[in-house]
Length: 126
Image (cartoon, rainbow, N blue to C red; front, side, top):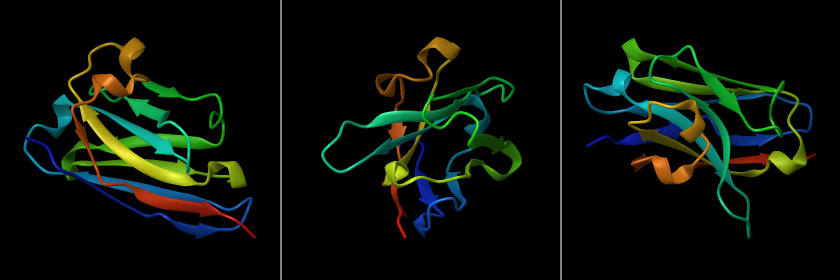
């Protein structure tokens, strides 16, 4: 069992930055591929970024590519999402997810993840 706790959300002006964090419980964090998803009001949950358990392979949604960086610190059981140049359309609840995923082709698929956090709200508004 893995429990995930996100933090770092909040209200930010357009063009600003935020760093989201997700701390995982358990001793096998390094075995899990980690992902960030988001869900805007009235919309489906969508993939934002993912990082394979090996750490070196990352994937980003086109909507955030070049503006966001996912990273992980296995010693701290933590995955991060640094988001820059934020836009109003980035407003959503952001969820952290963990799954035993070995292929980068599955990283974008929310059905491949076994564990989810409760989410953290990100609001981009002036």
